[in-house]
Amino acid sequence: KDRPYQLACCLSTALRHIHGANLLVSILYKASTPAYQQSYDVVRALFADGGGSGLACQLEWEEETAERPLGSLLDRALTRARSAGAAGLLFTVDDALWLRPLDAPAALELLARDLET
Image (tube, rainbow, N blue to C red; front, side, top):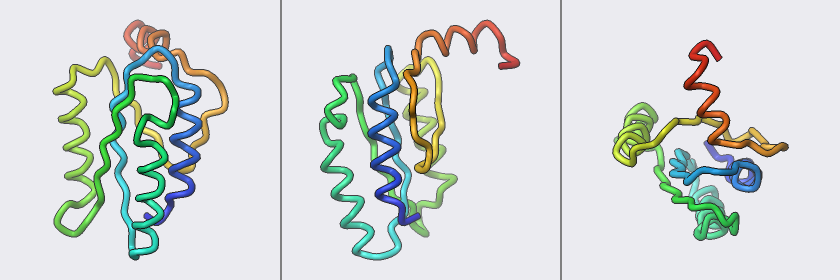
């Protein structure tokens, strides 16, 4: 809630460091005031083209409201991932910064081999 700057930093670093994957990113957010909504709109505009990452990247924005609580938004994100035939699902939070490259295919292969990872 009300963390557009943190979201921008998380997206920027994730898109810079995740390699080897087509990304379908579900952004779940909540803006408590019009000023925060405007800030989220700025972040959305900054990442309209995938943030210039060069990745095949699609961003889906979903605002949490009383009529659309977080649980239903998570269900929608999971349904989108399944419908797209996603090989994996990665959750992150807005205060996470990606500092090193992530080879997505290698990570998926490791997870498929060792379910206890």
